[in-house]
Amino acid sequence: MAVSSCSKVFSSASFECRSDPDFSAPPPRFENLRSRCRLETASFRSLSLSLSPSLIFRFPPNFQRQLSTKARRNCSNIGVAQIVAASWSNNSPSSSSTAGAPASPAASVVDAAASATPISLSPAEVAGDEDVVVVAAAEEEEDGNGTVQFKGSVDTFSYSSLTDASKTIHAAERLGRGIVTDAITTPVVNTSAYFFKKTADLIDFKEKRQVSFEYGRYGNPTTVVLEEKISALEGAESTLIMASGMCASTVLLMALVPAGGHLVTTTDCYRKTRIFIETILPKMGISATIIDPADVGALESALEQHNVSLFFTESPTNPFLRCVDIKLVSELCHKKGALVCIDGTFATPLNQKALALGADLVVHSATKYIAGHNDPLPSHHLFSPFFLPFSYKKHLKEVADYTIHSLFIHSGALKEYLGVLGGCISGPDKLVSQIRNLHHVLGGTLNPNAAYLIIRGMKTLHLRVQQQNSTGLRMAKILEAHPKVKRVYYPGLPSHPEHELAKRQMTGFGGVVSFEIDGDLMTTIKFVDSLKIPYIAPSFGGCESIVDQPAIMSYWDLPQSERAKYGIHDNLVRFSFGVEDFEDLKDDILQALEAI
Image (cartoon, rainbow, N blue to C red; front, side, top):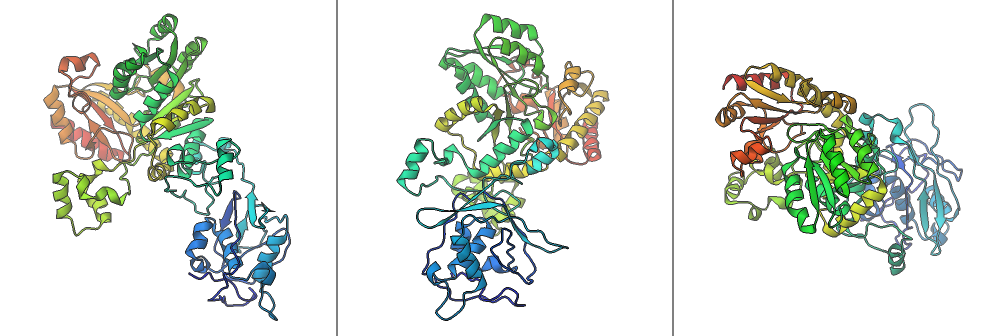
């Protein structure tokens, strides 16, 4: 495709393009472009070009569409792509104009820019409401081959001055993003590997003189934005994102607890975490002491009797929302040389700052509140009927006339196969790097499409959590006062055993409320089935309300007597409130209670 550019003075009222540019001259290379460039489409007015330190480039609204596919691919920043296109449309620098004809102003500027060292492109000052293309300050450098490299200075803005609400939107994206683009949203970089221009660059990378992701399992630009955004929220030096919360927890435990080591955890926790600690880690010679979340004496005893490497716990815990005194346990563990890791999934980075309270590491299942949308993953190949059970093949046949987009909207049967899963670990760079090294060996890499959806979800995290905090607390009070509810577990209630602690170390109590129905298994099933709004599902923290009976959802493989050892009774309900209207949720729960 031809690349068109200006053919005459820009002060003309109309914009003219050469239809047959000369491609005899190779395009300049723009390497290591890190300057933040912002393009706002300008109404086409008169433009004066000069080699002054401040340059204003204006182009008509259709200029981007005139760029070749190659130009857009090679220059992710449209401001630079426009300069490249203008350069390609002219002859080589030695013959930038045809014989006997004056060079066009655009060609003169590009040729002069290629020969001037250095040139500063700084934001220009304009009066009134003029639209301009603003190019951040950059230094132009000429390498040995005569090609141009733009080595821009990245804006360094401290996000520490922003509130958490603003960090969820702008951190790692507005300024300093490694992906050079004028897009407001972070692009998805779909690649499995990263190339080196020559063997010397590869050797420089291997000898740590050059940086590269090298392979998709070791990193991705889209994923890095997500990691840095979470770091800004947690106040952490570094964050590692993985394919799921369980992946994050298991890799962390294997990386930080040595063979033959010992760790301490709590009785109330996610069951799969307990299974890993009790059945998988012993195969590596790793033993564990399990204590009540509030039993500080038991923790001190374990620290005295064992060479404890790590205290790993949730706060609040799952499903009884017990709280651990993070500051106190961190002080006790650090005196004995043990690390402290808090799974803060139920708290979110907005309601609780585990690192600021003294913990060494904080883990989240990003699938829950952080992503917050129970998202379908947009991968067209996942819709192949060969990968679905017979019942779903039949369902696809019934809706064969629908587009894939319609399937996303109308096919609830497909939702369980397509979801955004993710887990993250935040803390000091030294510890996170230790975990990252093992992660590079084991895998469990987050798909960049999922990273994009989590980034998108985080932009409304503060709004969602505010609503869920409010609904959770108000509904917990209503449930506690209802005669058909036996007990409510919620740290925002004075009846909760760690209520005072929760008030000290949390700013909100979350949207999950656990409670016991005054009845047996079948009575509780009738209550759950009478609800109209929530989905019966095993997750929480999303926009949609979700309800489940832990005795069935998570512990049905165990006999009733074994479930009781973990406090999981048949009448226990875990309700995750979404962002629906409070009155609608209240009315739905009250009518379901009346039905039993």
